[in-house]
Image (cartoon, rainbow, N blue to C red; front, side, top):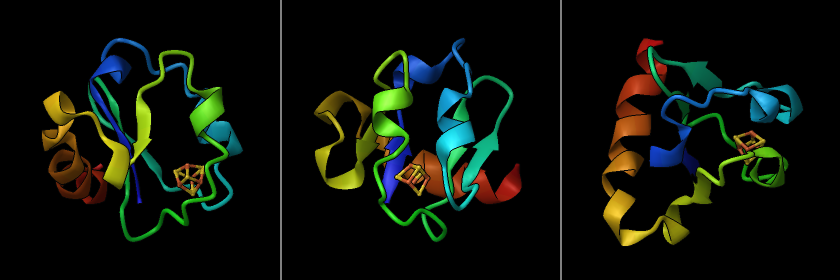
Length: 78
Ligand code: SF4
């Protein structure tokens, strides 16, 4: 799955949401989340993100590792 990380805070341009073929982005209060069971790893959203907040779960920068769990936890609740 892909994961939305820290740079998304106060961004939410939603350019990524528009290109996602399976509509697996969910909007939280301050940040978007990707539902891990719905993302098909197509990568379409990655270049669309203006703040480079989206990473494959295996490539999430160390300082944002907690976002893997956060996306999984929050997406289903949005
Ligand atoms: Fe959607 Fe593809 Fe991005 Fe996953 S990688 S969130 S399926 S656009």
